[in-house]
Image 1: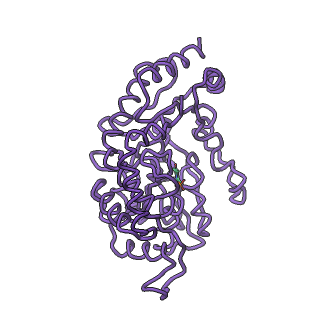
Image 2: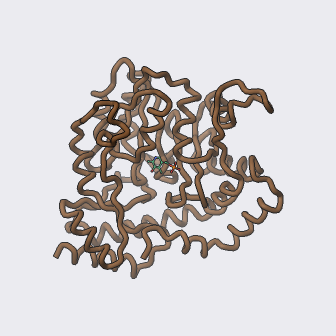
Image 3: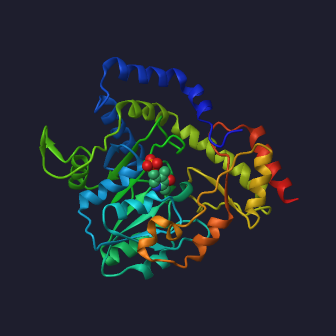
Length: 362
Ligand SMILES: *Cc1c(COP(=O)(O)O)cnc(C)c1O
């Protein structure tokens, strides 16, 4: 059994993917080929964002808006203590200061009350991560942002395709980013990502930054990076995007099954009424997490711990001298366990995972 079965997905769309890749190779349009612009338009149309800008990874996607908005060294940016390192490391990389905030017990996402308390006169924005595929309480976060004149950047690396109060992830905030890392719900065959905004001026600056700050050929208005997405990757994401809604339906059916079978045995994830998760991860909670994990491993059922170490305990952030405590983040890091989840998981595989979890606790 695989944790994420990318081979099954390739087999399902093989002909389309092969053709799309072959066409890029035949035309040799490897950089800035027509698939890149076409993908940007399709991503924007899919999620309802004004501007979508394809880029080299979900990590670069998080750096690009900071450059466009000219974030300064003294500036503080609020970010959850419980997330993947990239949500916070690009703030540091750009020279600004990440300010960790604890997360909500139920959604694993930013706790608005804790965010409110963390705002200082130096706070400029909030990186609101949509962890495991569910958006945070964006309405409450937006209220805080409006009150203090902050921007919000949704880190939608795991949530492109999710819905919050009827709106699509990556369309609701000043900036949003996603990742096409292969194992993400919408993945490519290497690294890739995208940035979204409703602000045309910011969109133009972001585009310039990811292309060496170039205004026109060999004329550079700002210091930038090579943050472009390969045409090959864009061509692959375009094929997968056509099947994405169907895949999300399938992921949701798998999640519903897990929840039906495992509720009362372990703590199962809860999605806000009326919202939709992409189920980038199906993550249970149990005080006996390590026992379950070892037992499943012996039966050949792969699991993962996202994430075993909250950000304030990462050596890379020791310079911040922030030891917390962030009790929810700390408890989650000890109790969470992600089960196999992908659109091609079979009923038999789902049943085997459930059976194994039940036995591990018997
Ligand atoms: C995967 C991920 C990223 C980074 O994306 P890459 O494409 O791997 O650079 C950033 N934030 C979160 C929450 C992620 O899960």
